[in-house]
Length: 109
Image 1 (spheres, rainbow, N blue to C red):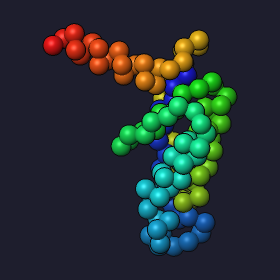
Image 2 (tube, rainbow, N blue to C red):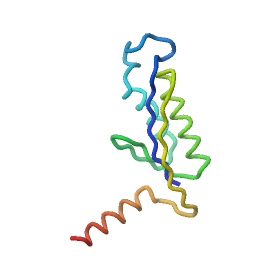
Image 3 (cartoon, rainbow, N blue to C red):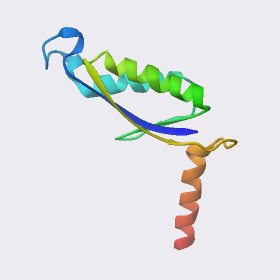
């Protein structure tokens, strides 16, 4: 499966006043989440709005959970947006889909 997800903390981190320190920046929280994804060893890619990760259901969802928890360290709540393409028996689709799109674009001239 491929999961595309994004996380964003809100509220005050660990009871600190809102807007204090680097921890108040969403990009720091997102970096903490992406670090979890990259350290998972699963195929992944991050764009300006989503991080994609590919693997088996349990391993992907475990990484999403841990990434969400990492972002949660920077706020009192976390918004999680998740989209999944569940296609049993297929691997390498995180790049395969893009390869097929590029090929189709080339055929259109």
